[in-house]
Length: 258
Ligand SMILES: Cc1cc2nc3c(=O)[nH]c(=O)nc-3n(C[C@H](O)[C@H](O)[C@H](O)COP(=O)(O)O)c2cc1C
Image (cartoon, rainbow, N blue to C red; front, top):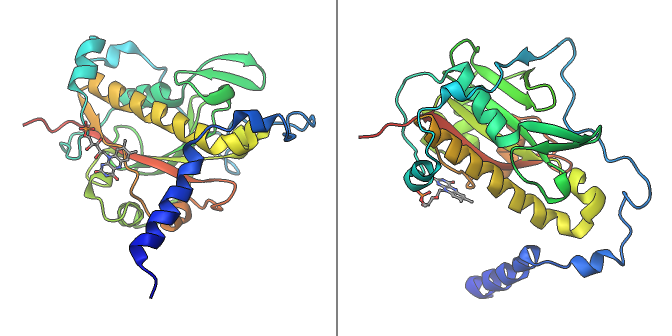
């Protein structure tokens, strides 16, 4: 009987490779950008008949704290929230802070509120909305180019499915809205091939950190969620698990500060 711990250690050490940079190797490989292939769309299309739901313009009027020092010093992972709803203006601000487009560098390249290796921006933001004013509970996707929400079909038992996908974590349903981010890896692989996996994971950290700090600034809270069930999470969002898959999650609600 092989020692399971020895096997696990071997596998774990092999997995370390994804964290290492092998940029010089890229020179020997030919990426799709070098072959002149198109980079693919910056965001997914709306569903049939859906023109998207306009979000309020991001507005600093939502801020409760404008002191960056206080936001950084006060940041912590928050897993319990009050029952108070989030306003649509606050949700708009959080979406802008995590994926909002600041300007177009070219018609195919967005510059956003978060950095991204090569400005590839490989993420889609899905929302399980439970308690947001003027927004019907359900499943949505943020469309950063238009600052709109695309409406998505949701299962009747959406909260139960989200909690199961998050391996039972109650914070993902006891919140006002749950952010679920997917990666579309080709957006980064188009130029960075074998380096893309590392860059995408690094990108995701920046995005979630902006959510943490933006939440602090409106007296809300969040918590990074990396312990999810890949298959269930992908199924929830009807993702194929190959060209798009869930990469991170985060519940958001009004901070329950005792
Ligand atoms: C990549 C990552 C994954 C995480 N996954 C989870 C998770 O699945 N569930 C959870 O409750 N907290 C999760 N956390 C939150 C950490 O437990 C938390 O950041 C850590 O305990 C430090 O606490 P602080 O954020 O309050 O400083 C995660 C944090 C990171 C950065």
